[in-house]
Image 1: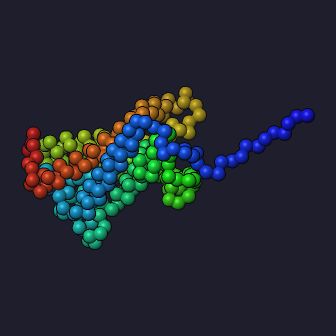
Image 2: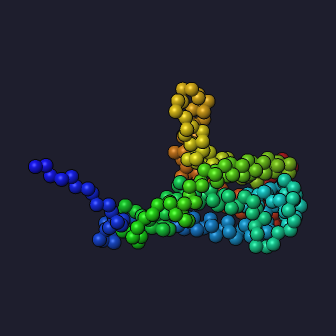
Image 3: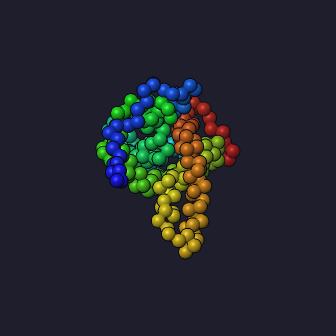
Length: 265
């Protein structure tokens, strides 16, 4: 007589580890440094976005990316590269309110950043072989994590904003050529590397193709994007650093704290 087929019992909770950790190495170092790195950028960018000073170096035509695009009457003369269709803004609204929410959404929903703050801040999981504090996992199917599914749409807007940052870097050459121009250009190059190495960009360029041989141009683009995609984590961190360095440089030059090194006036 054949034995009845047993139906596996579905798991009702996450995997349990009786010990606090099975690791003997310093597994907590990476989550700690990841948290400190992300917190440093969030605090710095948050303060600078609301300062409303030191964001435009008039003589050199340097505009920090934290204030681009500036499109209200609250912007200092010269910093509004696309005009001022809006009136004065109250102090609790950042001057770059048009771009900052989308850039924040793009970063928060980024596949790499999800991994970074899931493991380091939410401890889900903090590391292999380490017990996590969460009893269950519902996935990205409920609020607020269901918003992660909008990453592709944030990518489209981030692409446009990167174009705007590129325009800002080009406009800066109207004031001549100095060290700040190299800083702005370096930041734009890294922003393009991060934006184009995005998983959504890879999907847009070739994710829906069934026959690469019939689409050689898109296949070539997809191949190049795929190469960038392997460095997406590095570009994610490099752009955080370049954004802060660029903003700090413009801040110091615009407030006459330092002088811009000029090559061509």
